[in-house]
Image (cartoon, rainbow, N blue to C red; front, top):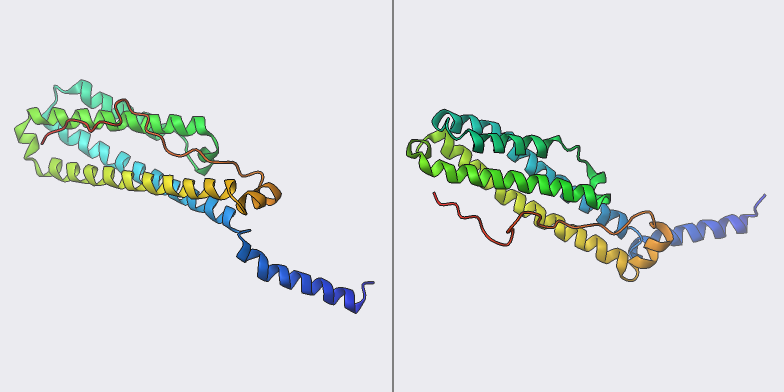
Length: 200
């Protein structure tokens, strides 16, 4: 049976460790990992918001521009593809799936841009209150997606920096070696560096 001195010494070591370790960055890696996952969840949230708006937009445009079937079909198909991917935070550990997901979202963005260009041909559609409200909602959503992506990129940058620099690199190799460096968002759309030419 341990002596009183031995138990006191063990208690002192545990107390000392509990006071010192949190201040030396031991918890930074899991905290930053969770921040990256939360930032990704916000990206998904904004993509879902956009996907939810699209059926209303398509049905509004359909009423005015029935002959634009090809463009409407492209939007519907791109939305179906983008929403069919089962996505959760585990996608962050799979760069290939993350790229596929982003490619599907970029395809949807392109289809929506083409739909907005088509709307130029229909003055009565451009003045329709439902269309204007949906257009405004989609523009707002695109802005929110950009902000969410930016926040995700920053969160991944903080996490990756922590596991690659001192003292995080030490904690990573000793305690969190199962956590890997994360891929960040990369633009996958063609001509992603150029703004689409959409005039309203």
